[in-house]
Length: 133
Image 1: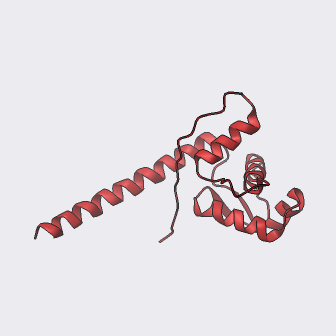
Image 2: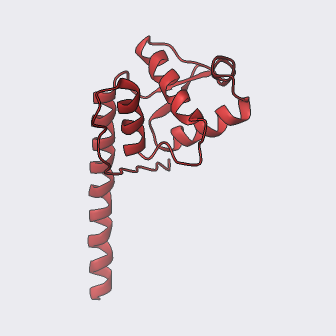
Image 3: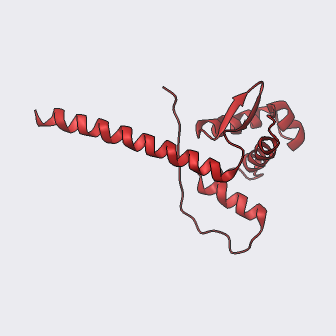
């Protein structure tokens, strides 16, 4: 069974229509970035993955490390975190977002949540039935 961590955080959208701030807000709303990431390395990796995916290309951890001037260990740490969310996939010796635009990404997350809730509901009903015996 593949584990997937889906986190949604309701936070106020930035008042200014700055693309960088909106992308930061978007990722934070999905629980991707946290305050401990002082140099915003996870955000920067996410942006590079988004760019690569929009060009129908994947990008390796070495390429990410070189491009962003981060250690490969830092890149692997953040890429693994992004893979746990189900947003990033490993493909042909590289990484990319699971879909090529943010709207489709949200649709995928919504479907994941619906499938998970449907499964949990069925299991809850089975447990309730067993508890009545």
